[in-house]
Image (cartoon, rainbow, N blue to C red):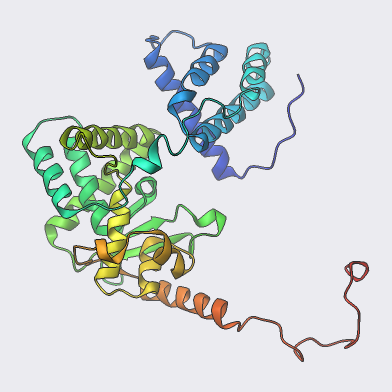
Length: 337
C-alpha cells in the first residue's frame, strides 16, 4: 500500500500526534479491559476509535485521526511486519467527519462564557465539603484559572518562577505557532496576590507539570473537566449552558476589562497577538465581578502596543517616493520574475 503524500509536520506537531495516540491507546486498552501483557491489535484500536466518533466534535475527530494516521505511517515505515498497520491505516483513511457531534449539539453552545461569582462559590463549597479524587485538583484549577486567565491546555507547559523581582508564571503560548500570540511565551506577574493564592497556583502548576512529564496531561485535563461538568449539571439540571474549565478564561477577560486594564495589558496577559482579539472574542466587561491582581510584563505590553500602532496607523505602509527605481514601470504578472 502506497502512503499518501502528506504535508510537512514540524517536530512539535509530531510529538503531539504521538502523545495523543498513546493516550488513546491507553484509553482503548482500559475500555477493552486488556491486561498489560495483552497485545492490542491496531485494527481493533482503529475500530474502537471509529466507534467513539459519535462522542466527539469534528475538530476533535480530525485531530485524533491525524494523530493516529501519523502513528500508523511511522509504524509502517519502521516495522518489518506492517500488514496489520497498513490495513488499519486504510480503514482509518476512509473515515470522514460523518457521525461526529455537531458544534451546536455538543460543547461550545453549551459552555457558559463566564463564571459568575455565585456559581464559583457554590461549586467551591461543594468541592470542599465532599470527598472525591479530583475535587482538590479541580478546586485549585478553577482558582488558578480565574486569577490568571490561562487556556486550560497551557498549564502543561507553564513554569512557576520569578521575574522582575517577584513570583511569576512563564507560559508557553498555545497559539504562538499560528501567529495568534504576541510571542512564544508570556509572563504573568503574581507579586500582588496573597500568599495563599500564590501557593494554590504553584501547586496547580506543579501537578500539571507532573502529569505532562508522564505523558498523561490529557487524562488529568479530562478528569477535571468531566468532574466539573457532572457537578454543574447536578447543581443546575435545568440550565441550557454550564461552566467549563474554559469559562474561567472568559471570566478573567471580563474581570480584566472591568478592572480598567488597557487593551494592550489584557492582550499581554491572555497571550494574544493584537489587543483587539481579547476585546472582541472574550468575556464582556459587564460580566466582570472581581479585581484582576496579576500583571503583565511591561516589555510585552509595549511590544503589543507598537504592533497595534503600526497596524492601524499604516506606519509600515509603502508610500509614493519610498520606492527607488523606474517610476513608470508597469506592474504585471510578467514583471514578477
